[in-house]
Image (tube, rainbow, N blue to C red; front, side, top):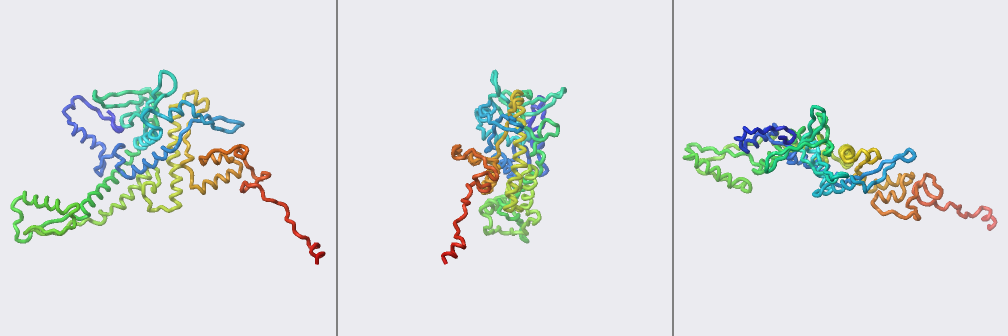
Length: 433
């Protein structure tokens, strides 16, 4: 049985093992040095991991993905949109229960947490792929047989027991990150689970510390000559009553201990052990670095400025989002396209233009440079901004060139009137005099 990428063997002679004992054994496998169990399913308890996965999946959810026909005309590459291609329709509706937005959010989340994304390619009797059915990566494993053939095995538990199914590579759409063994992606979460666990442990410490009113432990002492409580039951009853009255909302109330009992020296928390804010900030930076995400996206603005945050956002899109799109594109072209499609030049590409746009002013300045250089037309500009085209009579498809007759190369406006003004001549003024 495979759970989170680890192989567990279930034997019939272990029937005397209770479910609690089995859970304790599983907890022991994934327990870290800080005492927190980390798996790809529980890692989002870390605020940093949650912020990273949210930032990446949301950007994927707004990026359209298109199918193109790549051609060459006079030695230059061109792409023609293929909206009626079977794969384009498949990506528009991957299955009956996921929209294309939720499909990409879920698939990217699994890829980031497990290092793998699997989907069964459901086909009809004949024809193209009809549906992509996601396979949980925690229940799926990639194996290599003695003949070096790749197989996908899924393990599922149900009312009838544990069932195993084996898929051939042609039946599965597999997207993965880097793999140590060359065929099954490694989970980034499991690689840095100690850092994630330390952040969660620091958060739990802060919650318990401030949940107690940020008050140090109180020590009671018996006054000189006092015999104390007659029985242990009375002593514990006093402590329980004290905790009920003075903890949580009752903290900082006046304390009046019973006769014979006095307050001793409180147990103070050492400053170096109480400074967990710096620790949590450090952990955010470490975890963000492991995923390649800029610190400002996980809430660390300690070294952020207006300029470097803007550039870090651009680096996030080019160094994190763009590589992930290339990983998905390559896997989709391998698994979803036929050999005839690939031979004909069919390709699959995400369109990150909407997400990679800068601010409005910078975007318009860049488009204006392209317009004046003859790279784009007015309709190309309008299409980039999501506006309807203008007619050809109004110059919508004209391309300007530097020094083009009848138009200004810098502004695109018609040249100003260049007639010389009618300036009176000197001899005319002399004759009048």
